[in-house]
Image 1 (cartoon, one colour):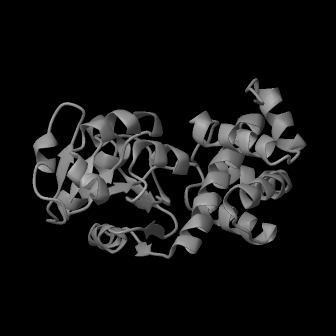
Image 2 (cartoon, helix red, strand yellow):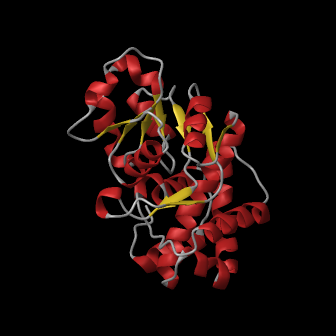
Length: 257
């Protein structure tokens, strides 16, 4: 397996693979790119920030585009289409890594099973299984639900944890109604934007259950363009009022678009 990205996720996956004797090559900003010079056919995990995707993809040989497995959170469909790599495989990570291996960290806190969809979904899920992380291949409809679910977890927990000054576990314990109200509002945006529909109570239960696996995680509003900002844009595009989300963003000093 080739992994591009020597941050928290890339280092953690590489360390787990090496500890279990699973072949792996880690590509960093400055080293290891020769691992992509071979013939196409083997998956390449992209464990980089959304903002770095364009620069990274530009360094990947075009024959390897279909081998890319994107592990990024948030609404990145439009970005992948712009980069010409929409045929790649997508994966969502339901685990937490607090810090890099090189900084003395790298511990993986497992959460839910990680879903994958695309040409290399089965191979990616198999690799995750080899490093003792639960993963499975899913169809596009199911992946689309998980895509929205993870987006809502990030966007809602980010806002509410900042507002209340709490961790994700404390948020679910002490402010579950706030979480329910915000999810209910933003779920309508997701339904309009990507055609995913699910009962709000089911979604809230799923989000709360994931938070329970990583209760000390300090969520915050991040990666605006692919999380809260994307939801703001889609709400405006589809004519959906989001007063709860707007109120929290205004209170935090974030733009409402």
